Length: 173
Image (cartoon, rainbow, N blue to C red; front, side, top):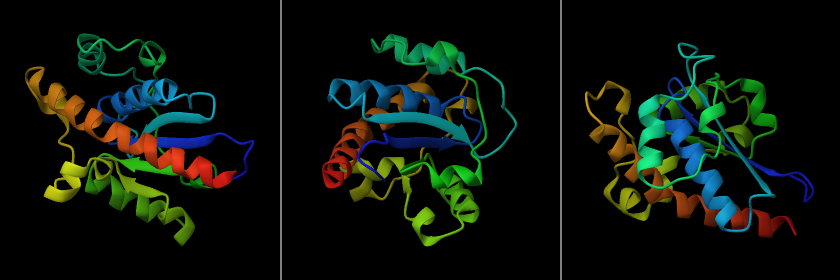
């Protein structure tokens, strides 16, 4: 990781249409608010190819809009699958649940790659204390409440992610 290269964060869920794009957009906004938007690149991907090429779930975009977020990429989002080769370029890989973390560890070739993988909710002190690091997949919900729950989990972890990355960037200097 060099001082001139942006710090890269990739959020990963199953299909890259619900949890990971929601976290991607919230984190982009938080990094911009923290004055780090020009030093951090946030994107997202899925562990499976089922949704590749599809846009973000409309319920994901709706919960962000309901909560007053600007469009930080939602309108242009196209689902993609996480590729093993990305470990060489990404600095932090945030898994939405333990199944994603297991799949990412399976893809990782080295200890350095495995060290980049963290559970997104591990950056929320309450979730960490309670041991509730998995995010349920809101896609299966019949109403918007599952997406509201995902949004609450993402936003609870976002400041911790920003502070972690800020420390990492300060360590580059």
